[in-house]
Length: 55
Ligand SMILES: [Zn+2]
Image (tube, rainbow, N blue to C red):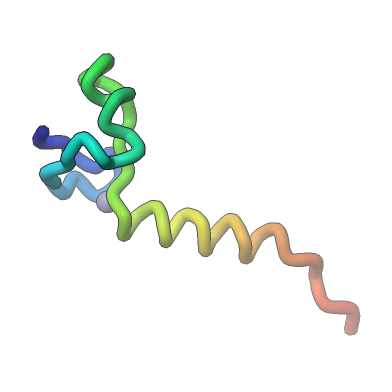
């Protein structure tokens, strides 16, 4: 199944073993985020959660 990343617009082919396959098959308009973007988002989330270092 062809899906398009909602963040970078890259097209990817996903198979039934992909964790989002069922969801995307049900609703084609569902948001899909590619591996690259999901890693980037997770990294950013981790960075913002970090408590600020005391000076
Ligand atoms: Zn992407």
